[in-house]
Length: 386
Image (tube, rainbow, N blue to C red; front, side):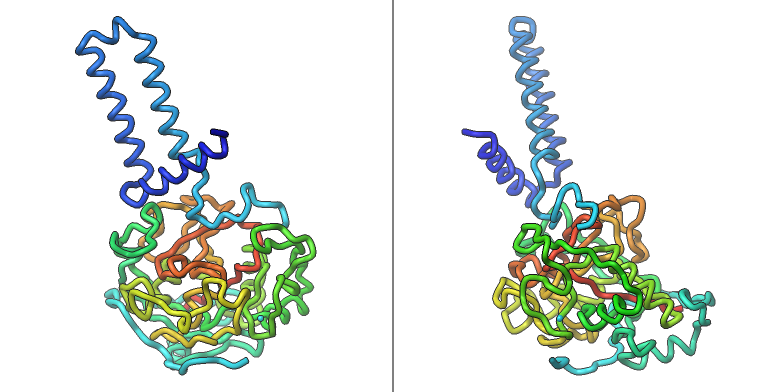
């Protein structure tokens, strides 16, 4: 049996065990087993007679445990390249439902008197009143946004949810401390093109197409046909950050990428099921499973109850969070994770056009290198409401 086959066997064993226990749980019990063997050997006098055999067995078990837990690559996170390379688009569907508050509103939640970022235009009750009336835009090139009222919800998935990644989705109570706005749609090619044209942003060439880097691929040529209302793909976290900084300067508002907590809260729209429409999802609810071999125009499948479109499939969406497989490290107030995560990798949410149904669940978490770009990855924006 060659090394690759051994690695695949160990990875399969690891994957099965992780549906029941976390990595640390498994390692802990394996080490307990080693200590138990040692105690038995000492008690029965075996240790003194076969000291070399006992020592070798213990060392082998310990090394094997560490190898299984940490050295076999975890494919449940969508890490496109390790390490990340230096540089590596019709009509709207659904109804305009306006603001749809959900969850339990936190008492004393929070408007602050601070001024908006970017151009420094003051924000306050008037801004909040404007945004809470329904879909809005802040400038002629700004994306359509929807107001989301802060509150509490259960983030992650229950043990019984099909497709659950146990180590990444442990359910926990989360508070969205502040109201915010989120893009109704994933950022479209036409929207991104306006940014590139005005700023001459040097978007990188070379993009992952079917898992392989294609040097000729880019956001203009992602490997399949797109129109102006398709979501932009083949963009990195840096491209997304440059875009939201541009929006901030154009509008005078605090545009940014959403946090994982904000994204899941808006995607669920009050639902505790795997998908916003219930425990199951069909082909009429989203673009996934390689049914179309590429993206669909944004809004094609309608919105959830909060007025947000395409939260299940179409493209993976880049979050502002640095990646940490342990959900408990995320800030309790809904902000993006910073230094407690690995900022060389960024969290992704929502699943893509090529993802199986289990990977487009509301709780599904994945990651990719900050500089990695793929024709299955795009982004959505958020905006602070002061």
